Length: 93
Image (cartoon, rainbow, N blue to C red; front, side):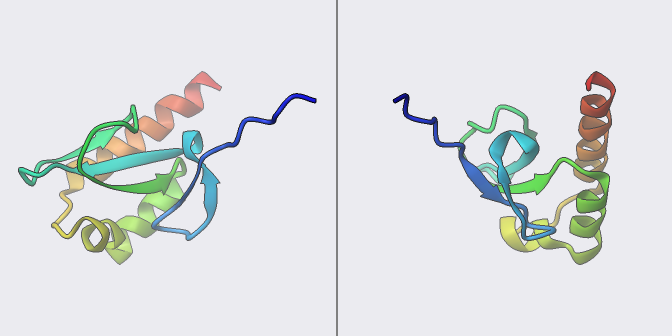
C-alpha cells in the first residue's frame, strides 16, 4: 500500500481556513524589513499566507491582518501584486 503524500496545510490569515499550501500565496518580511510576495514559498523571513482569492486579499487589506502578522505596515503595492497573481492563476486554469 502506497503511503499518501501528506499535503502541507497553511492557515489563511484573512479567512482562517486551513488550505493546501499551493492554494495560497505567501507574503514575507525579510530580516531587513523588506516585504515581498513569495511565490516559491521558500524565501527566508517571517511569512504569512493568504488564500488565492480576491475576496481573501480584500479581507486581509481591510482588516490589516498582514500588518499584524508581519508586524509592519503592508503597502498597497503588495495587495495589488497579490491580486495580479490571483488573476494570472485564474487565467491559466
